[in-house]
Length: 319
Image 1 (spheres, rainbow, N blue to C red):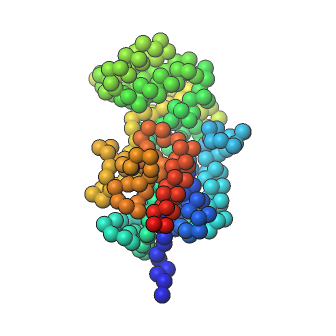
Image 2: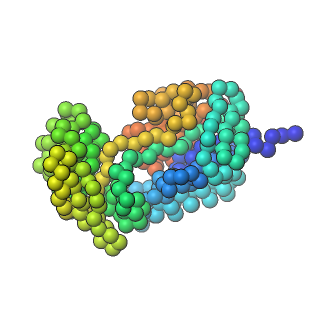
């Protein structure tokens, strides 16, 4: 008698990578199960991934007028569902990948899988301010992706929070649109490489607020971000800084904790894959999207790698 909790392909994650993998696996008649996530204590951990927490998406091909992040993910889910993908909501508590079939434990049961596609994504690190989530998801004006949102800040002044290479890259990129970019960093020295520092310091549109932290985001519905309260960590003095947007560039955390000791990762926790494929260090386990991508982190690149992972899984199963 067949095991009702056994699948040829299980996909962890329901962002662009996971849902594209589900679409391709379904069309290959592999009847995948998508474990969507959600159900935990984190209000930002919702089925559909990080795009569920964004407003307008203007850089996904095919939508000339843009599309809301949640609507885009809803369309992707319905498309995968149309071809027969199954869905389970919940958080994977544990995995056993030392032998096939792989075992996955959720709060309400256990599944086994011949192949596994990990598309659990990565989360931007935020400041943790009480008002931050509302600005990110409803009001607008707070972002962790200059490539995604920089265009909307033409002619404005913006802040970039961070002192590493990513912050320097974001600040430099934003000067293509914003009139003024001010980097806010809690230390008196930057962590970025010398080359990146030199490039940023030579850009006349970039200013600096060192030894400083953002304590409060100002603004509200209808006006977006209008400013920030910034505190000097050395003197304790606070000041109001006018700004039209705040970009967080303090890093990302890949959602790979449950795979530690089972799948090879880099020192930041991103899954390592064989060059030119989505294959991880364990045969039959594939990685797609931001969980294996610390460089691009775009919805369209995640979707592309989801397609690759499904094709890799199909070929693995056929041998």
